Length: 382
Image (cartoon, rainbow, N blue to C red):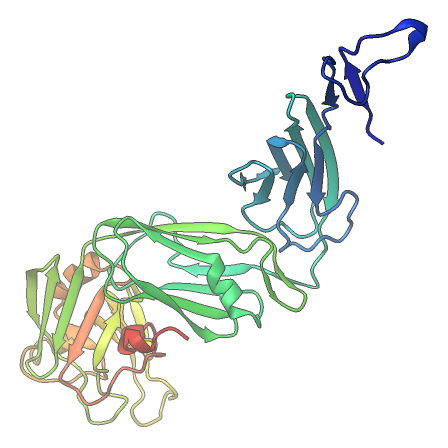
């Protein structure tokens, strides 16, 4: 029971109070005692298996929060106060298998402060979720304007939306993009149009505490960043036997080439929008599915090889076909160039550069390497 004090009441003989109930001459007033601020923390103190996706929440009654600090695993958890500072909510999830401490302070109407400290531990997930690989993920790498972001997870998830929501892509020159799942463990981010050139892009995988299925919780967040370089767009015209390279809109080189001879599907250069996937010098090229002695078997050592499909297509040096370059298509499907032109292209190429091949009847399959630009953006997200 709360008590009240009677202040300024006149006393009469015998110690009795006069005018206590009513009357015109009394000067007394009732003053209620101020209540202490009452702080509530969730998850509750002593909880041993808190859900990682449960946001820490601190509220106060009869007061105003002045400070909240949540720490766990050597890190502080960020959060925000509401407008009246009667509630504080953590900004993100919690790391599984981690002990947390909450210290909160509030002041009542008289400015008197109350501080509480609580502790809890998050559960250990049956199926911890993490990112095992990101492309591009080479520190300091500069990529081309067509570069996708490919994320590989350590396990299949059932709540794909929860994962997508946790993957944040930011760019200095923003452009619309979306994620597409290639498999239960791999997804790709592609922009509607090519990245604007000469900028930085960052991926934040905010998976800490994310619930992505029964017993599946993200165990840690990570960040990656890369630079987008010049807009290098190469066009290979199979019918005209030429390769034209444009950089930031300007033609910087046109060279004669020889493409696939087209006698079989295998020997036909794929048509469509490709991306540079990597390069090597030299590269050993062996006929797929054949062994020495089989009809059509070959083993070629090629210099300055720039790969643009998973099925084994490269722009590379081919001194043996210089006489046909610019006149005829004689290769097994690759784009042959002179040693000097191939070296120049090799030196200028970066992963994610665009190579458009025109003039053949074999369309590049979207799953053949990084053929993602073959899918209209309106159909991209799934």
